[in-house]
Image 1 (tube, rainbow, N blue to C red):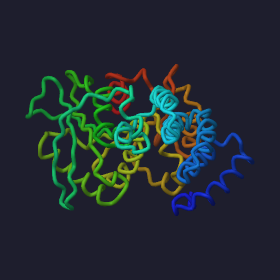
Image 2: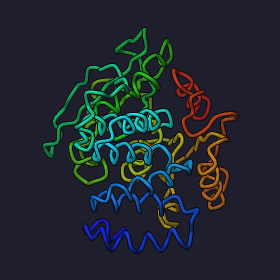
Image 3: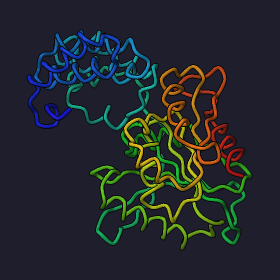
Length: 324
């Protein structure tokens, strides 16, 4: 990883080639080996490593997307489109990357992946100058004088506007009905969520929401797939704002060390699909570190990492069951 971050792709590939030889079932090893080849413009080798990484559930969706990019850069448009369709079928959700990725420029006019419906966003300017965009889903019978529970819901993918569009359409758009929930879907600033300027800007947004709406107590917090990473991060950095955290299909915890885990000081609910082998394994390891009163695992029978049974309203219902 250090070689990759420094741009020394040949050295990274040397280490990762040895790793995958010693540990052929290491999904991350194959995934990052493909990245090293790709960055070094060794696209044929990248294809072979991506195909291997795509055999593992944990890295399948992202590896299929990277495979599409490698094919496109080789002028293999048909294979690129097939891999791209397979990536989204496997659960790849970064529509923002799909739209801006220059690797796919040669095949962009051929893409068959449907983009989500676009939603309107409000915007505030934080004290540090960052512009914070967000969409609020209100109950159908919304009354500005009534106190509502508020859920900050980080979208998956690249956390940008298209990823937020997908989350609103598929996870939250029709979920509020006559409930007492406000669902706030924030869009990441240009430099993403995991930095201190974004952290301060998010707190400014939360303060603004308290001025705009009557909020019942502290905010609830959730994130689906990659959206769980900023959700988990801000549950600690901005814990004075939040009362609990629910993550769905999250691998965000795998790089937290024990000291960081010990700092968790609010109820955490980890929702995983029973057929998500890696998610179940990782969550099981996490539970061993905690008492049951601190962190709970909820396994969804018959579902995998995509949690399709919790789309279109059921996800908010599940949160309601857990945090009431």
